Length: 167
Image (cartoon, rainbow, N blue to C red; front, side, top):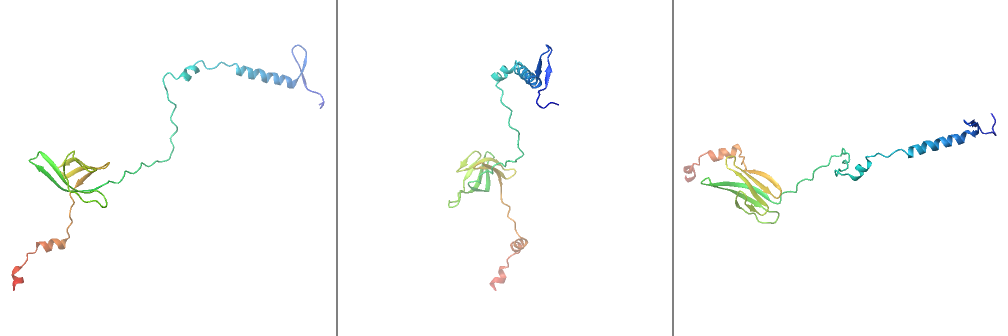
């Protein structure tokens, strides 16, 4: 091949045109054809957003987000008794220790009544249970069960001999 000569092509009219110019013209026509392609006729509707559609939410991540722990109760509450007067009025006898350095209180509260941050939600006499809302924490209170050891039971059940002490 000739290194100094350009390759030429013969056009339909018989004119010789360099091959590189033909390729440039062909690429230009292709680009102009793409630029003249009609825009989507419905694009304007999507841009106006007549239905007030929101964009899709971002994809969920695999990270587990732990819920914040509820704050500790502001007071220590213990159930000491439940009173029902003629079956009409139910009251809960509570021991409330408001916090460190504060005096213990022993309120008697009915359902719906409140003492400081402690509110009695429900009283169930059949189950010996009181539902209490302490700050934001709702809990059920029952009576404390005192566990006695076998030796304590034997000591209490043996009769005391008073005659032996007098002699």
